[in-house]
Image (cartoon, rainbow, N blue to C red; front, side, top):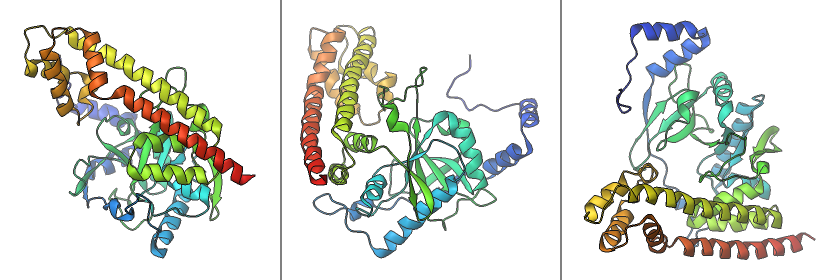
Length: 369
């Protein structure tokens, strides 16, 4: 049995067989990727300087506006004729809906369909761009950009998916305004329904691009409801002020708030169900004689927890509470976790936030009349 963590080294026969199945274009692209497989790049810019003390984006300079304009123009040009379902993500949508930049935007984010990645890669290559993965745990350090093809692009839990400008040799270019584009994949279930981060259904209208013309180029915006949903999900201080700016554009409706509320409630139920399954697995691995460290190890080895790199401290405290309790059933562990991590309080706070945003939407709609 092969260890899944071992690096696979194909035989010479397998390599030749794979090469014989490739077109000349695919062979050339594969050779370029291999030659420049890893490329070191400077660290990301510190975006915190672009946010004021009230967590509002500072007004952009004329140079920043010129750069953002050029970036969007290049985006429209690069995707012109791609026939793919792509659209902008993030606060750039708010600026374009607002007909004026609400501040400086650190990068361009887009969403694309998972089953269109092959066609998108081919289209990008013709326009001087390629797929890359990058690990960015320490944003102050140089980052390693790893060139991949469409098959490997969406096959990583802890790497940053990016589109970067490249020259004819596959080297990353630094002279393009549109560069290091964050990519989010639209994942769907077997029925074709788009899924949230927690794998609950999303409204289909959120996956449909909202075309607009920008300096003679077509730019696809996100549905306003989707923009607001992710702003609430990310939860950074400036996301809250961005959300208010979005509502002030008048593009958000009460129906959008209804949609977001429904997704949040389904995510809450899904989280409880997933937690129940996880602690049911843990209950089968521990016994009444285990100490805190042994219980912690059993928790830490759960795949769902392994995906999260920031849970060790919380899991250690949870393991300590469970080791002190006579009841080590899965139900008790789940209830202890819900109380300790404030799951219900957070959900109630989200409901309260949505109630307040609903009132803001009503007020914004009145102003439009």
